[in-house]
Length: 563
Image (cartoon, rainbow, N blue to C red; front, side, top):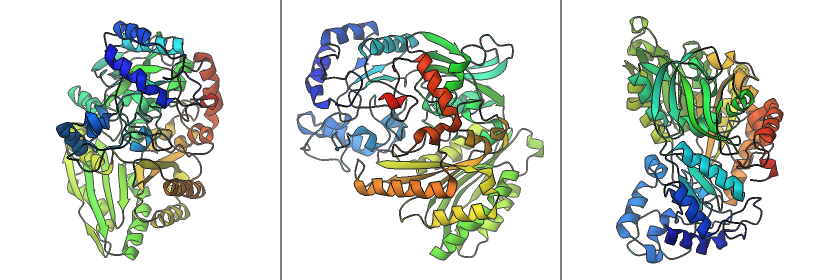
């Protein structure tokens, strides 16, 4: 380990980021090798000093087999999640000037030449296996004013879980779940059935835990996103059962969290209520969540899924398809569907889900499919939609929803994502739907549009100030994403211009409210966009629970003071 640390310290002066308000490698204030070695011993040798993960394709560190494996798996979510410092999206791994170590598109037979540096990847990673490792890491970072970051799977459109010279806590290996039939949050009187999930538990494991206990836990669409990590504390808006059970934050009854002093705290509605409120959508600027307790709802005994594609035979037909599809959305909401769909003109891919607690009264898959006949019957549209009934959510997710999500969620690429909350009022009016249709049809060639029906129902029943998420979600129909892909690993001026243009158009069509977990660092007035009228309270809580700014990240609460 000492040799690895020595290597890291020898190259890291190149990574000094002059604007950082934190102490990073290459600065005199950064801990010496002796201090790092001592700290490493205190956490059982779990301090990593990662090399650029693509260096196996370059120079003297070239390894033909390993490089070929990296190239083959660079678009694989599970593979990228297993790398301590890697992120899902390449633009966040590079410095603004492009410095980093990019993975080649095809496997080379000879070592690549050129620079291979850490770029924006973390300089040191604590591979946490226990909460004590996290506690010691936070204390160490606070003592030396390190650029502390938290990372689980690396699903991060902003680069919040990394930064040049970062000291990162990796929660990937904190992955246990437990079902508690009667859990009473500390200091409270009410008990709940819950699924307790550690910080590294992905959605796939959360749903499996629900199936094992004959319950349903509220998680996201993507199987590798960590439910108690950024997804949960960022709001948990993206999830297939939000209209039935509420957003992720509406389902968390308690957090175990390491505070800025490195101490374990309990946060719920009765104990540390301000911290609890801030963690319900305020993001990662308040502490390191080590475990969250999600309500466990009675399991569905039937889940009907309609999934597949609709493809138009002309530009005119595609426009007609989009309009009729959007005009059907109020009806689909009345039928209690949740859904996710994405355009790739002239095709729309989709997954619609509806769950039933009593299979005896559940319609058949064929009966559910009749609700889509107005779409399949559009002249010039080819339907590859299929309706299937499953006995529970876990089977529906594994067999249909997860594969569709994985197909649409491209990783190992450069992506600029924009998002906007869609109001009920807009979707329930013809004029509002017309504006959305015009926006979709007018998008530049090659730019998809994603619609997630995660509003309505239970989401609307929660007060606007009950959690920290943008109050706009409490009158929402769902939200939209527009991904702008780049042809290079890092952002280009052209791509940035397109992102800015689409943001401006979205403001006109949808308004300015955006989803904190899914947007772009180019968002202006981000405090208002992500949290609206809740931001002043969040900022005040931040100043109380973390006055020294131990926890920071780009466009996080309090990052006006640097990150």
